[in-house]
Image 1 (tube, helix red, strand yellow):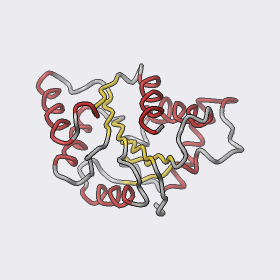
Image 2 (cartoon, helix red, strand yellow):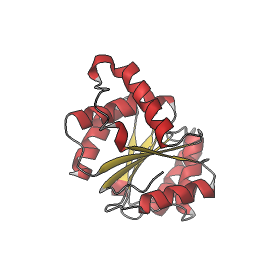
Image 3 (tube, helix red, strand yellow):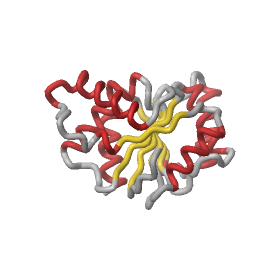
Image 4 (cartoon, one colour):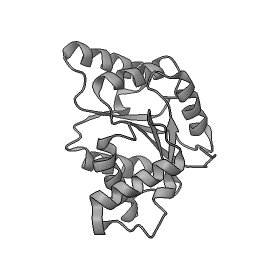
Amino acid sequence: MSCQTADYTLVLFGASGDLTQRKLLPAIYHLHRAKRLPDGFRLVGYARSELDDDAFRARADASLREYLGDGYDASNPDFVNMLFYVHGGYDDPDGYARLRETLKCGAKNPPVYYMALPPQTAGEVLDSFVRGLLPCEGAQVLMEKPFGVDLKSAEHLNRQLRQCFAESNIHRIDHYHAQDTVRTLLVFRFA
């Protein structure tokens, strides 16, 4: 990824997954189209798929064409040009180092992290915060349901979250209802 100055960064873990392609990118695109995203906004995707910025943008463009149809203005590249990508495993210190460098690049505000991941994988990402591989001071985190696979794993995820994030900065959401939550959070957080 090239160095891109940004006032506001949304880091999307699981960026190459189905949830991102079908639901999250279209929801964020609608915010962009309605001019509800702040100036200086960028989305940084992180996932295991071996993509670069251009491949991620092409995938996003194809998804938006498929899922939004006529509601997507493919002739205007403003939205896809706000998208960046960092490749790495969820237990990969080198991938997190690349992501950390990307976040340092011109960042003016703490990022918002969105975990569009299965519960087991989310635990691996949270472990990277606990180990200090990613910055969490002042950041917000959105956790998708299901939150853990049972009570014990949910309690473990909560302990990991609270080691790094203030409770007021933790948002646990059901992705079937997440669109309104994300819109509200992004508008208030980045306003």
